[in-house]
Length: 263
Image 1 (cartoon, rainbow, N blue to C red):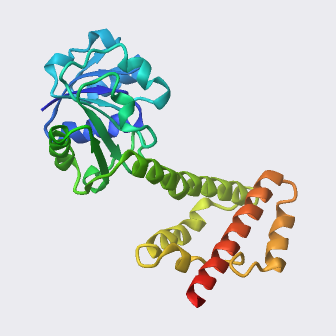
Image 2: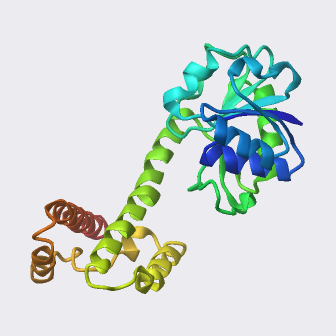
């Protein structure tokens, strides 16, 4: 199959590599960042396009749009997709956002943290699909099943909630790692000291629901320990507020779990 790729960021790069390694032909790549488009095109033996007008969409079997939400519609309105299906990859953008611009359209959403230059086994990346017709879904499945062993159809509403959950599970947890790094560095300690703890935390939720895997002083709201921690954060009010909010949320969640189990 022949594809045109819109975008050159993290998602575009990882999807482009996955399709390229699966034997797809990436005809052209367009990105608002021409330098990144050229670098990715070289990696995928493709041709960079310096403007949407240079794209030969009539030669493609499908277009993958991995553009930022803020620029996607502006690029789409410059294109004539004709009968070529176009699939966006955004977590929070409804499928029907494409309706004014294309006859055949859908969503190919990879649920994974994607970094441009990090090697990734895409066969393990869950892909979530949506399409405007059964015929378009059949094509989308053909593409998705080639690059991933985990493919599922969901609605735009489900994908929106899934994306929100992913922000909590991934983006927010990674920010906690960053804050932990700052606290350690103040005392000349390395982040690597936490890696066994982080690994076990992630491994544990494969076997237990997160509510059962939760540990720490916030469950019982141990004011003695919590107070000492807040004293350590007295010169970092923003982090202290995060600590308070999360501790209270953990405690409240634990109490609700206890009530439901007893009830």
